[in-house]
Image (cartoon, rainbow, N blue to C red; front, side, top):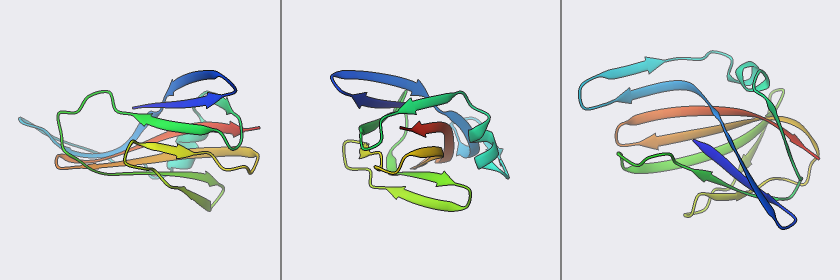
Length: 121
């Protein structure tokens, strides 16, 4: 999964890391659990994003029926839920700081959690 974000007149993208997975494909089932997704997120390359900027979630393929897409920013144990609209777009908050981005994808084939390392400035 890719996150796109805009700043001034430019757009940029980065890949988020797959964390926990509970997926059932045509020929196999795949399960993986990450106990500390925030640590995994902090281990990723830091991406600088302007606070208050627009972002969007880009799915690499769609061989499934999307049921729900949720995004949150975490700072320690404090969660900021991001409203994701029908076009998979959201707005980063105005609160500056370093965050773990968590994206949860729910489909008819299962669920996947993705994480990233965000520095809002």
